[in-house]
Length: 415
Image (cartoon, rainbow, N blue to C red; front, side, top):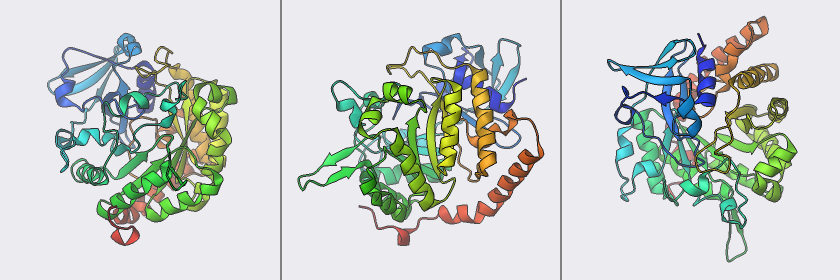
């Protein structure tokens, strides 16, 4: 029988078929093809002793049609059957939020402004990543942002719409983390000032901090060092977390699959920005995102260590051949190799003493670091690390409660 984290990894790698007994369109969340397309799966929750495990399971990609896993429903209960041994795993399917079917006061469908992936709210605030506008395209080969923004979601979000959606997600869905993504974005103004994606995020961060509260993250391609003050300004506006998607450790793989990032900013800039923001916010409050399953796993392990050494925690995403991307026909990785990667992730975080799993934020697109403990052999060092993280979770409760309140004094009113 698979452990919850093992089932999670297997589902990411193999996908899942849906039996005719299921009515997921009525019982679950709609499949959302927004942002980069990684959320284009079915949201499920796997019960686990430590905490529930959220997974956005691939079900529409061609490889999922041949999966050994099939979702079944019986008397209102959902379970996944593994055809290899007949083992059945009971799971739950979170219902679609009622606000998905409502409009903002500006008559914009809320589901076209932001989507839940786990219990966190993801919002893409640019019109689309500018790498898609170059000819030939410099877009990352695994991404579908350029096909989704403007089609499955609004191409430009109003601050007022974002606040209304974030408020609905907080009050009705219990979301405590709003994550803004800009892709690669800049704007040359008439006064010759260049507005980067970070500057674009400022009014959204201020408004959510002022009117909604909760934790706020920003993801954008690194700005030039001369513009690092933009990170400082976002922190003052209320940003709690920065994430940097450098994707691959191997320089050749990075240049080939992320041509825009390679040509405009370079791989080194991601680590420089990680180090800077980690010093500003504190260790473990910045993440470096890397994709596992395309380059050799030894390269991914080196990338994990580089991220940890920069003072950040690694967010490892299992490669997903999203429909419509240039890599849609590349097979997903071997689950056993991915289990090895995530076992290494756990040990790397433990050796560095990085706090993981402190905040009650559930992300369904990745295997979260705190979920990986079950992949390593029990040890005294592991027990001490787990005890430390449990203690920090308890100590963080008053802080979490304080962060959930809007803080108008810390940020200006809605722009």
